Length: 138
Image (cartoon, rainbow, N blue to C red; front, side):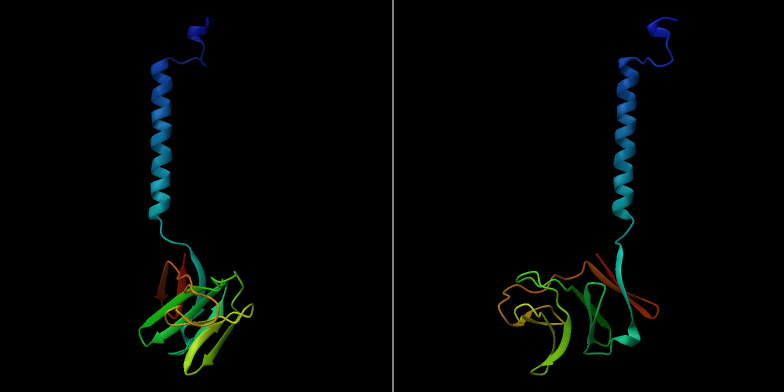
């Protein structure tokens, strides 16, 4: 059997057609992955977060500022990457407090209330309700 008749040989045209098909398949896969939606990274029961309060779960601060609103922020402090581990009242505002240097953040907005941090908390990509749960996606 000659090399040109070998079942493993291919013409230049066949080679580039294969490359084009493989590239199209890769691009389609990437597009589908991007359109598949965000990954749920934290989930809490609505009943566990009263209006005006917040909870910390799976690396996220999930708050319930008003009856129909939920927000979520990363527990990573923007000042020095400490892990925020406490929700408390500070002068009438519910805040998340970083133990590393004492920065406090409004759990409704993520804004700095006090401390060395100049930057607000990092918000989740999306927060949604699903039945009796609040879901955080990133």
